[in-house]
Image 1 (cartoon, rainbow, N blue to C red):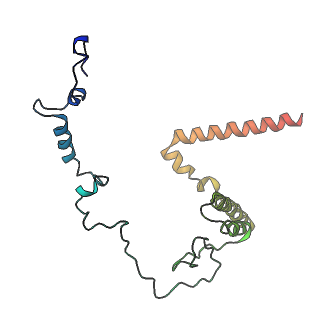
Image 2 (cartoon, rainbow, N blue to C red):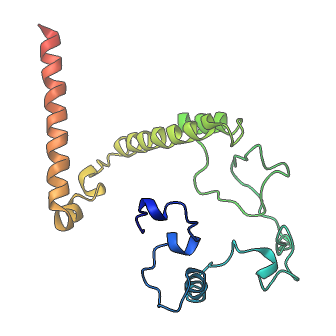
Length: 193
């Protein structure tokens, strides 16, 4: 930007004098440069989506909102053979196809049933579903132990791969876990006194 001396302070300054001139040819104005840059951009996917509607090539055929291709419902609807939880937002009931591999059961199932009584725009809905997932994991561990299968928690956590590909991260996690365990042990011993 040019510095103005007191004798030129009263003269009007054109906008082209205020813009930086880097990258411009001597015979090129900033506006010409800007349009030249715009012509270099169409290779970017999605470029120009926010341009003025009258300058967009699809405007005469374009509809607001865009039309959706509606697929016909399948002729045969899936029949549930287990309990399937349905969101309150699905006013027509079950969707044509749904999963039945993990029906709700136990305490986690009860939590899921309570969550699906709430709307999806309620944060409690998703918090209860996350809690139900954690409870289901503990229930699964209990079922494994009841069948005599002791889960290999370290292998399931991917310790071998972590050691192979991220030794520093694994050492840091182990140090944090050790420090946390030591702090809990120290607090428990301190409380006994």
